[in-house]
Image (cartoon, rainbow over all chains, first blue to last red; front, side, top):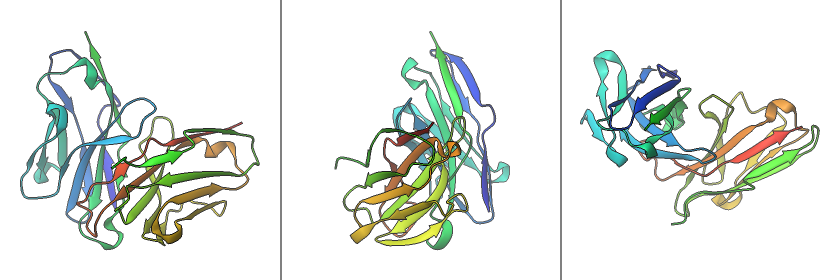
Length: 116
Length: 115
């Protein structure tokens, strides 16, 4: 069984400030981890994914995340927030390989607000 | 590559009516997924196809729900005798390959409102 916990349903930052969105996972098998972003009334867009030995993953729009197995965490960061980053962010986990590991299990999401 | 498309984008229906949603995946993707997202929650897995075969259905998918993917191309999700609790965003996603490292590409969703 897999689960994801996103700490903080709402994060508010000033434009230019550091963005930190927290994600902790639980998985009985080695996981793949994903961050998706959702803009209002739109589907989900992949920001980045962890699927290999490289624990620091860089994604689109200046975001990155670090996989820390000892902490079961995969926090998302961006050094300097932009107004266009305002959206809802979802962390998701899946198992590796085929079989029943294909489905994504999502956290409840974190709404990011960027203040001018 | 035009991405995953879903139709309709919005559907308002009265309780007890049947509704059908369509999803067109990215053309070369052999895997197709349906998720449901309610307000304030992350998407929840409903069902999954590999080519035309439906390989798993979530417990969330009651007997009133049915999904098909004829010939491994587009997919339809039908809800019979809709209830107010069915109001949600229904998301379709597709992916390539046999391994879960291949990312799932999501469509824009169909928002269902049951009155």
